[in-house]
Image (cartoon, rainbow, N blue to C red):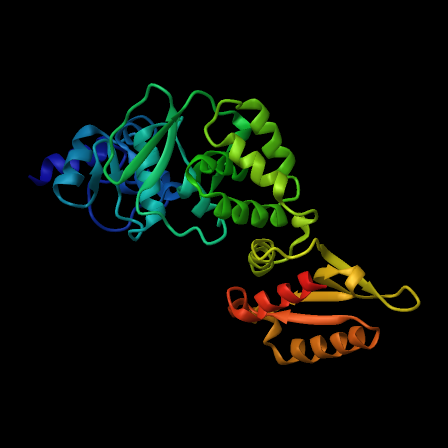
Length: 328
């Protein structure tokens, strides 16, 4: 049983003996396969091994029989060079589904780190209409068209762009969550809204298109200037509580016109300011001292300054503050 293995290793460009290779020797079968799979989380297709890495069918069978490699899906080989991971599973699905398949919907949203989108239990992939692959723990969605500017790569995984992902999610996401996702993406990419509008014009019959446009139209002016996820959630909460119209990222200035601070939310005509303090920065001792100094200065100029923490968003303090504003 040893001789055939040695023979086939040599035929595949490997070595016929154990030990270190000579400096100029050809790479072994495993080295060639691993080099090819390095950018694919250690996953390759049988076709890639044969046609691009030069590995024979006999060697593939031998590695699988000996459990050196594993075949999680027919035609997709796990070289066992990478630890098991969710991204590796996504790569397996994409390799099996083909070059015209892209991670989409909540799978793409998680890859793009959309706000509060956890790793989905089922991998979601979009493929051209007419295709119907079947892979366990995977949901395939079909599309009649997807442009080259609607797909990208994140963590070496093919997926839809943030704009296309939002368009796809619109049909299966509640308006409140869609608003939060959109507002958070806008603060990170100010060109996203123009991209979304162009996609909505291109895909006039996509389910959820109208919902996405309605949500985008209702976003308060200046949403793209929000500085943190807490501000996104806070502004959304203010709107649900029925707060009077407000200005986002308002610049407070001193008597001489000097800039004092840009605050999160303001009602200038009422001389009222609201700041959302996240623990990551504002709990630092130096930040607390600076916050107190600047807020005391704004109060001395006649501004009423309110501060809300994450725990306050659904509590009575913020609701009471909004009631007082509405009462005038």
